Amino acid sequence: MGATKRLTTAQAIIAFLKNQHVERDGKQNAFFRGVLGIFGHGNVAGIGQALHQNPDFPYIMVRNEQSAVHLAAGHAKMSNRMSTYACTSSIGPGATNMITGAALATINRLPVLLLPGDIFARRNVAPVLQQLESPFTQDTGVNDCFKPVSRYWDRIYRPEQIITALPEAMRVLTSPSDTGTVTLALPQDVQAEAYDFPVELFRRRVWLVRRPVPDPVSLGRAVEVIRASRRPFIIAGGGVLYSEASQSLAQFAAQTGIPVGETQAGKGSLAYDHPQCVGAVGATGTLAANRLAHDADLVVGIGTRYSDFTTASMTAFQNPQVRFVNINVAEFDAYKLAAVPLVADARVALEELRKALDGHHVSTEYAARVADLKQAWEAEVDRLFHLNNPVRPAQSEIIGAIWDACGPRDVLLSAAGSHPGDLHKLWRTRTPNTYHLEYGYSCMGYEIPAAIGVKLADPSREVYVFLGDGTYLMMPSEIVTSIQEGVKLIIVLVDNHGFASIGGLSQSLGGEGFGTHFRTRSTESGQLDGEYLPVDFAANARSLGAHVLQAEGLAGFREALQTAKGLDRTTVVLVETEREVRVPNYDSWWDVAVAEISESKSIREARAMYEEARRKQRYYLG
Image (cartoon, rainbow, N blue to C red; front, side, top):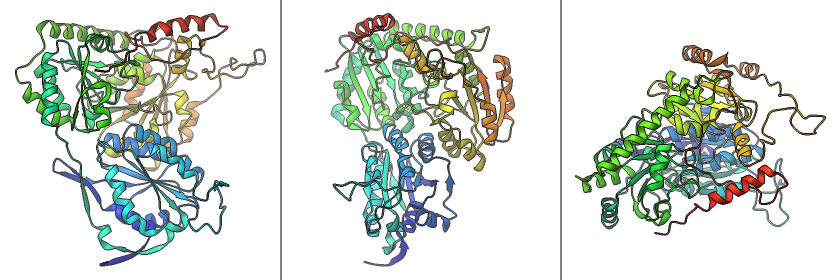
């Protein structure tokens, strides 16, 4: 071995991370922006010590380890997966707090590196504080729980193991098709152990993020199928944004006249006023997109994994002759629904298709139908933005007011509850990466920490966090982190006294909203149907360091948003909405099983409707 440098394992890991870069289209940047986490006995003397002697590699202290992973994931999504953070924790609860975030990042295919502390590798002091013991093996601990939610997992028993483990971690993190959570479990004694590492490990490395090209045979088949279709329809997924293919999609759609529907992850692939953009598709879709999907004889999926919301639980596509062409960097997704697969980068594939389909355009009749549906939908959005609800504003009016306040590059962020469905339908995106919804895991508590990651990715943008009272109560503590880091957010907190989304779902399934209202327990019924809980959200937010504006009515809310834009730090705008005034479903359905046997008449009726809807579900076998 050549020249070496004596470092602890933790010091070597930080030195390695500081020197990792990525390149795409000739542009290079550092991949890791720093480390997020909380110190405990499992990492304070290892990773903590290493960070302390590397002040040029920022350490951000969060208030919950789960939040750290959400912040990293939000940043990775905003940067189109070209940069991220590492997350460190102590052993035990500090580590397992990160499991939810790890699942979110892997499901959404966002690169995040986790460095949880682990129990002593040398074992002679076991059981240590917070150690999970097994009578059958000494080689299992709580960090094994990360295995099913990680794309790569390893436990470092000896310092020299990082020489091979770290490059493998980077291979996965920078892969367009295989990225997600990478977990390197670090026993606390190994973190502090010194070793003579090869100097070569710490050289500047540049990882090329490639753009795979479609093979000619598959491309030819896709062109043939598209030319033969009469009612083609495009579904734009997150892969369009991650590959920065929005302009290519806009040109392809304009050239061919094929309408474009968007998934939650893909919303913003086209500007809302592009003639071929018909908005959200699926269970939370627009009337225009869902009707076009219903009749389509060809669906071209671009960077989508076809979740149940996108396919309306496999009921969205009802044309008996429907076929699929899938463009995806992941072979796993490209082959779904018996499609003609183009295993390729979205931007490259669209440019190749555009050249091959030169002169091809949908029929005049089909183009007119697309235009009519789009016009009707835009009128429906205008109606929902201006309901003039007499008591409290409806959520759709709140969305309209936020949209009016936003600049074309400002970011709207949400994740769970009734907000994602309404936003997917109603939000009018103007530029890419301004609509930030986490809906692969629909994780309550994601919103505030992820928004910090978004703001750190591009401080020039205003970031609006839109969340309900239920999800706010799960993770308000990261307001403190936003103050600590000087990261200003505008948090719109909708108070509808409970879990309105699941409450509405419960009602639709005959369950009468049971267990979804924030009420005290009644002495008469024994159920949670007493008085509303006296939660003072304004006092809570102020106690965490935020400005708070309490809005009265829609006019007051609009005024509060303008005030918030001029304030110097994170501001919470609190507004009550009318819980039962909802945005309709538009020819869509979502499969949530209803009890087959019940004493309740409403549930029996809901079961009958459920069985009828299930008859529309299809297998797509080519």
